[in-house]
Image (cartoon, rainbow, N blue to C red; front, side, top):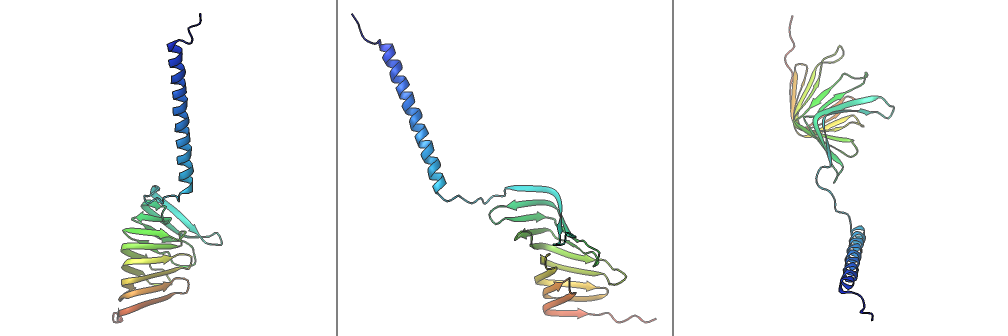
Length: 197
């Protein structure tokens, strides 16, 4: 006489079926979640995604010649707008055609595929004297550098010294390629009297 499957066998079959049902449900939910995530717009990252300590890089001209070197204590990349924040930046012009120039600041922001460099807070530009030119110094709180156009500009108060002459004003535009320099408003110029022999 056949008594049928034992209770232990029935329990094992039920457990296997329950486990298969649970695994199938988990697989279905996970696939549904992935499909939904693919359909929804991606969330934009607002946190920096990488940084570089003690960095330096050289920007080249279209002809392959070095134009300027940028270095700093730390450079942090922000993926939301593809910009870089730089701590204690130093910019040095390179090339033989013009006297070398050094620009320092407390911080900087590099944007638009490295074509716009905003130097910020305690900005100083120094160009030493050469046989052809007097020493030049510029102090301001904000300076926009457009390296591809060889232009510097500011909408802040600016103080400059060229040799012994002193100039100040609000707003400045300088084209290093053409030698053009303009103070835009509230301009004051002090030329010392010529020395007599």
